[in-house]
Image (tube, rainbow, N blue to C red; front, side, top):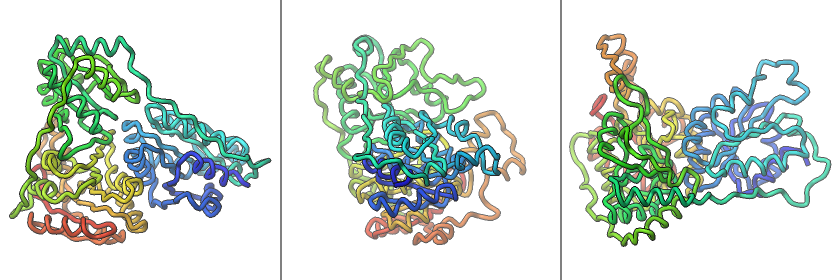
Amino acid sequence: MNGAVSLLSTLRANGVDVWFSNPGTSEMHAVAALDEVPDMRGVLCLFEGVATGAADGYARVTGRPAATLLHLGPGLGNGHANLHNARRARVPLINVVGDHATYHSRFDAPLDSDIQSIARGSSGWFRRSARPDDLPSDVADAVAASYGPPGQVATLVLPADVSWGELSHTPSSWPVATRRSPSVSADDALEAGLSRLRTKKTVLFLGGSAVSKEGLALAARLAAATGARVVTETFPANQDHGAGIEAPERLIYLSEFAISQLQGTEAILLVGAVEPVGFFGYPDIPSRLVPPDCDVVHVAPPGSDTIGALEYLVAALHAPEVNVASGERPARPTGELTTFAMAQAVGATLPDDVIIVDESNTSGVHLFGATRFAPPHEWLTLTGGAIGFGLPAALGAALGGGGRRVLAFESDGSMMYTPQALWSMAREGLDVTVIGLSNRSYAILNLELQRVGATADGAASRHMLDLENPTLDLAGVATGFGVPSQRVTTADDFTAALERSFATPGPSFIEAVLPKGLS
């Protein structure tokens, strides 16, 4: 048995059953090993950023790692942006990066590179396998490292001769990683949280597993018992949402508005989250969003037992059960297709138990509110801010979602980073509805141009931020990748197209032509 077969066999023994791959020459034995380990699903991706983003989406909906197969340092570099998002989402993810044969590296061949330096920016664990016999234990260690907690990216380098080399003996069983349980909050942190809840104007700031249905319900009880406010991260990795689920405030993306939102807060309790700071630095706007004299209490750090911490606080305060607010879904919109009408159509038609992947950026400002009383669903967002996340994450979420429909919102500028994911969706026959939001502009950058004080209004700067001349044909791009597509320009047509897509197996693409820019 060669090293590549042992690698896949060990991954399978550890519950890893999907391999998002963009291989090259150094990885050919790993590709061939798929024939020897048929219960490992290999998914071909046409760009490394699709493979890494898909592994992120898969991990978010399953809680388990997928693996990637990447081609040397340049392939890992191509996948870095979505590894950054996965790192910020704190999900388990395993990179397998092929490399030159160990004896070949000293010749400094054209594709030779410092893989460890490339991996350092996104990986919490790194190892280079030295011998075929080392691979099973190396793989098990990578799996264990990926789980954390908190979850992280683990990168294992696979030299070509380690991949094709034969093991001296085949193990009677493949090593299985030992997973550590989430840590329990320290008593002093919990007592500090209780003290602030009893005596100060407090915000419970939730992230990670605390934005599950269970965590949101516990936080609502604390708020009802103490008058505290509940606020979630701006971009949670995976939040439960919809009818019957608590829907607290989200922290506003714009720093100056977030500062106003938190104004008057005397204590902020961090549960599954870190202290919020501005996405960027702006002239005359603080980077820290909490008031200067606000107490910051780390009640349950990311990767810890957030539910256990919230349960402790609820029990200590004897916080009673609360009724979740109820309401009506939006009416089906008619007329012009604005961003508001688009959101209303989604809220009116969304089926039960959908996975939403949101890279709508400025065009999706109304979506979260419009789906407040839609059937329960999950919401995946752009944790790290590196665009090109939406389509790959939708691919991975569909493969990990157990047959659930995925609804992906993709802005036109962001779509151009990783459109190749559409081809993989078509090839795998996945039930994904993609909404391509066409406003023909990098609208967020037009807004940021003003916010950072770069207030130029000349033709040269405008030319850098619009997406016309020529106008992108999003539906044409999707058709070219094998996904049935259409373009709609009215709210009536958009609503009808949504309903058809939800009722039709396989992927579909709807280009929603919206007013240009921020509207």
